[in-house]
Length: 425
Image (cartoon, rainbow, N blue to C red; front, top):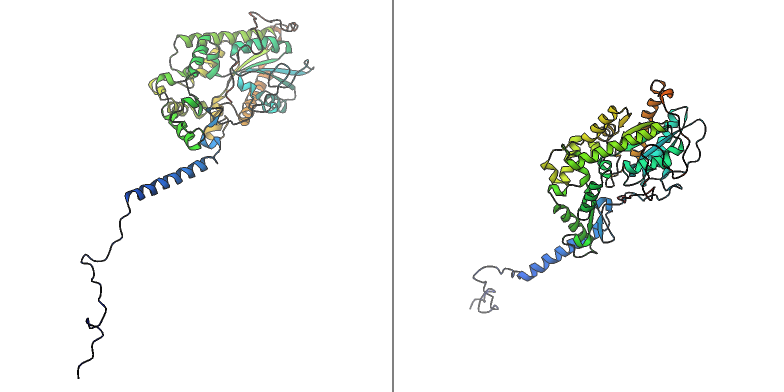
């Protein structure tokens, strides 16, 4: 009997496939073009996400605003265009009431304070603090306009201030701008520089679309960000890139700045002379700056970061106020400098008192400045500091409207706005 065939007998089973000699089969490699396409798709998705995300960020978060075919600093406030019948950002003032002490506050855009409503301006806050701290009644009249130096302030004092029969006249002096504003030569140099200079203050840019690097897709938020940052990276890092106003801090003044300082001091003396002629006390107050409130050393470091050309020279952020303080002492002018007081609040207490990009005082800064000035004026009003009435000239009758008053009185044509410089908002 023959044996049954085995189930595994090759003769009866289906032929089996021989395993490849090289082992198990491996997947076929992805072609290069497939990988490139996947990479490009990933990049496009990332760019799309970035584009959408940037559109949700505010100008304050981005550090710039793009409007009217121009990169500029973010708008931190809406300008208040209201004003009185003379065009100043203040309430109207009538004839002087009896038993009221009148204060004239002179200045530039710090006094005009178009970044706040009229009740929040330094003048109105000064009036509030004076009346809150004294049994006497005070009224403050603000005469300020953007771009004014002491030349325009003197004209405003003669035309509007002296006829209001003031008891105190205060000049809010801003060394960063006022010295330059009192010099025709430095004014021309500033205007010429601003035609091409893109970074006027830290964080404050003016870049036209056609001048922005690699700005191809103007509708793209991502392209705008890249172009704006690239423009900052490519900024002028030489001495020529330093804005003209900052040379007021130079350790040594050149002839132009020496002449500007001489003109500034002469104008201040003329304002004091006009005050004396009207029987009013003249007071000088130095305003703070957005970099100076951090201290002379730290503030300078901040400026040098934005303007590397400043590292090639010597600077002193306290020099202008020291100079004007010494000048005031020599001529018997009561003087108050606000910057050291603002440093205590800024560095010590972490308070922001200046607008981040605009540079002017914010509402908290306006109020704090007014509070310090009020305390200073009331200290001068105390009996031991009262001026000798017998030694003071009698106050003259108010002049006819438009008529100059006081020695050397000349009014520029087109007053009260003989020379305007647009405020940077």
